[in-house]
Length: 150
View (cartoon, rainbow, N blue to C red):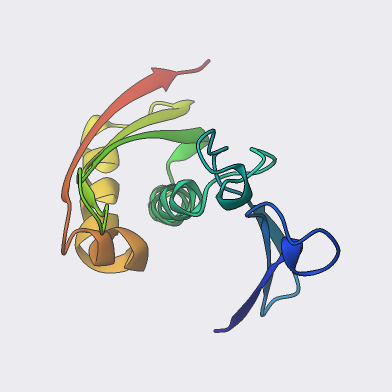
């Protein structure tokens, strides 16, 4: 796997803290920093997610992918899945994630709670590389709700 990240301020004005990542699969991801009122030349322009937001979003995508795949492989009628991630970070540099809570919402017809609980556990214990990696420094907790559809 590879990725190239380029500073978008490197040409022209040399201001801002925007970056564009081009992934090995050929996709583009923009990132930017928060504006810095004290030192505007060191801040971003708030035009895209922060890099740490992108990391959190990628982790959510990784685990949601696993949960859906595990439920589908179990022949459950899953019709939707979302995960809301909330996090806390250290107060001092490096401001790593110290706590992450993942609240899943699974929509489907007759999907048993035990299957959802098992899918989430399997993701976090075996399959989701991102959450397993972040779990080395952050306390990760999970919860879920199931919305039954006719």
